[in-house]
Length: 451
Image 1 (tube, rainbow, N blue to C red):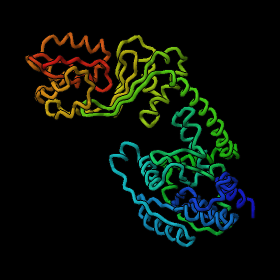
Image 2: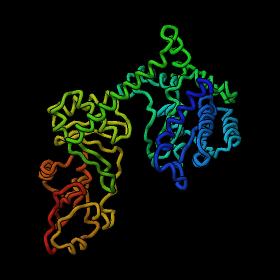
Image 3: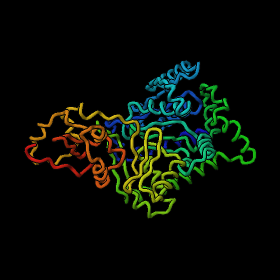
Image 4: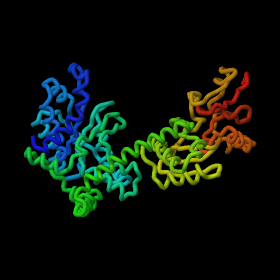
């Protein structure tokens, strides 16, 4: 086995080693975890699939059969290139020739998604969704990212002005959502030149994507123009940038631990959308305000990512810091595309935008389930006509509504945030509007017997 073969195949063996050495590996009646190998048809993914098969040869027949049965080769058909059908056919034929299970996933990119996220990002998001089909917790998704890909990613994020999280590049192992599978990049530390030598040594065939040569795509510009220029002065730049990414992964892990520790000291809650109120999250600021600015930003960056599923923009994070956490103002509001950020009563609220509530007077008595009541005579509640239900906003429009100022004071006293007040439910009883507490509120109106 030459050096390129040894480097690539050993990268695969590293994945299997814990299972090969474990006691449970002796029980072949239990299936090996499901494995999906992403096959684009390009050189790197073809090498990954070939090396996966080569590594099998060193195992016992029982292990070979177990892992083969668990492995599925998946090609995602984007339909973005005129030769996309030919690539899909090539991948299918390659899998069949090597006796791998094969699955073709076709995806279509909505124009709105392309305009919002860009072609590359939209295609990437839908591609990973397709690759995860059928995978569950602990299963594996293997992709053929290598050392040059890592260097390109780090440089791309550097030019975007990313922080530590972006500059750490791609992790070798990462849990995926929503499948809870594990994304593995076994070739991430392997140089592109080694993969190329492996492919040529085994006389592998692959397809070339012509779009990879288009330097108007930023990653391609880094690959074909920026990296070659740097390599003339620093020949080991790909390796060194990849090593720097590893250092930053350790640094980011420490920042994550610190953020989790700081957030654990902050009371917080999340509430799903209902018929009456949008989805929202809140966190109290008292503990955060005792921390340094760097730790505040570190903690909030994690909190927003937990709620939004993506990293908040640095500019927005700075606004939250200045207008909310460090400001003496009682309230503030920042608009995002799909969410609103509010400051009220010492809390930061993250509220879903463009929420349309159901008009209470058109709802059935099932709306009782959305409220918490303290009722002396439960049977009396059933006697209230549906038409008697209203919302605070609706009540203020009515000629019967009086003394709205005292209700505003009640909202403030009970720490009901402004965005929630318009939908606050109540009932008309003897020409009086009585407020009823919603799901989160522990301050509920006491209904008198006999009503």
